[in-house]
Amino acid sequence: MTNTQADQTTAPPSGEPLTLTTEIPPTVARLRAAFASGRTKPVSWRRAQLGALRRMLTEETAVLERALQADLGKSPVEAHTTEIGFVVNEIDHTLRHLASWLRPQKVSVPMALAPAKARRVREPLGTVLIVAPWNYPVNLSLAPLVGAIAAGNAALVKPSELAPATSAALADLVPRYLDTEAVAVVEGGVPESTALLEERFDHIFYTGNGAVARIVMSAAAKHLTPVTLELGGKSPVIVEPGVDLATTARRLAWGKFTNAGQTCVAPDYVLAVGDTAEPLQRELSAAITEMFGADPSQSADYGRIVNERHFARLTALLESGTVVTGGQHDADQRYLAPTVLADVDPDSPVMAEEIFGPILPVLRVPDLDAAIAFVNERDKPLALYGFTDSEETKRRLTTETSSGGLAFGLPMAHLAVPDLPFGGVGESGMGAYHSAASVETFSHTKSVLDKSLFMDTMRVAYAPITDMKEKLLRRLL
Ligand code: NAD
Image 1 (cartoon, protein in one colour):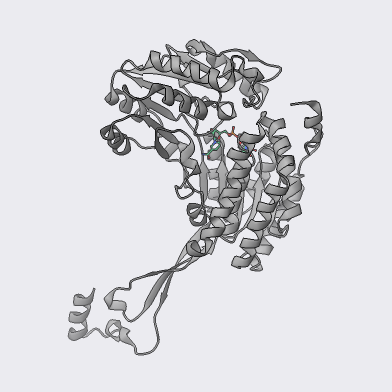
Image 2: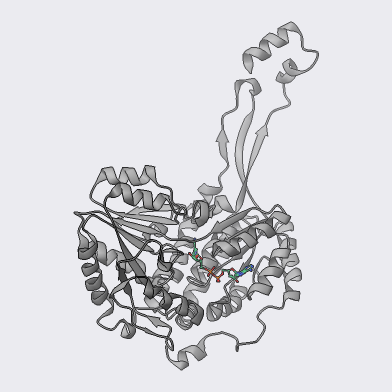
């Protein structure tokens, strides 16, 4: 990135306060009043806001691309496929299906209550808080917002302070396109998030790490606010003998090194079954060179580590094994080459926590039983990936392991299937979103029973209960 590019972003000069914490209570009050007025409920309002958000993404693509370049060294193509275009697709899919997702669903009524009608009706929750992380700062701020708006809520988005250019761009653009009475962006870090969590919301949608998730959940408990927690963890890959290792390696390299490995569903480590480790490592080295050249620091398609703290954390992890390929790093550029590590001990630091960077350890396991046991002994992952030609292995991985998502033959891309809910389980999170699942997350499903007052068929249930009534009741219920 050139200095000129950095200057063109909308990031405020460092040190300048982003949003004053004193501005938070009136902002939340404004959103709550907008929701209470009924303004966000009509489907016409929801469609108009989604259309406006879509326009923002297409008209302001260059601004957002520059911000993503400044924050993460993200190339414009990657910014499109994983962030801006991703949200546009989410909006289009939502606009296409919203009517059917919102349609009340009739359910049958037991004989004892007939004649009557019953249905499930979706209603918005109210005012929702969306707290986003830095790694896909457009996608993870705006994709939940699509769901919140589609379900008819007012919404406040708090982007991550660790992607300051993108946070500033969103704070500038969103009010220029969307209804400022009902949608707001609040910038800031811990003090602002803490002030936000003191407010009453009707739902909190948090994406980030498990430690902060616990803070969010305890703050939510004070108001009995429901939460969705989109977290991370170590997403394992199991590679079985006999698979096409060249294709496997290319797909793993794509999934791992996109956004320099800073992806919640990136393959975290590989369990190479039987004798696959060495040939797979060779193919991974070849795939990395094919994708990023002999010197990936020169590749326009390869990103940078978000900040010095993460850079130092990641370079220390290189000690956990033998570097098969990569390992080069440059603190000034926050550059860490796509790296494959061999001879990794399961108890080494690289295996202790989510790597969240471009280091791929390859561990050997004797067989599938050992691989499944390895996965099941650890926290439930956000994603599990299997590379196998065996339907029996697919069946076993589906039934014998638990993870937020499971994909065979391709990492990461299950997120791009709009009708697959995206979320974790256990330590990788609770709740899910994307498309219909987003509308479900940001709605309450109200149970409605409608019994006519014409003909009082309920008399049988009223006291005094005669022998005849008792017989009937016992038969009916
Ligand atoms: P982060 O540091 O940007 O934090 C996320 C958000 O939490 C930010 O908006 C931040 O301001 C806020 N925050 C930080 N401290 C807080 C506090 N004390 N109180 C309230 N809010 C606070 O991002 P991160 O947590 O480093 O994100 C990386 C993690 O997120 C990884 O574990 C990754 O796997 C996970 N992640 C999950 C998904 C998903 O969709 N499941 C997506 C992306 C990232």
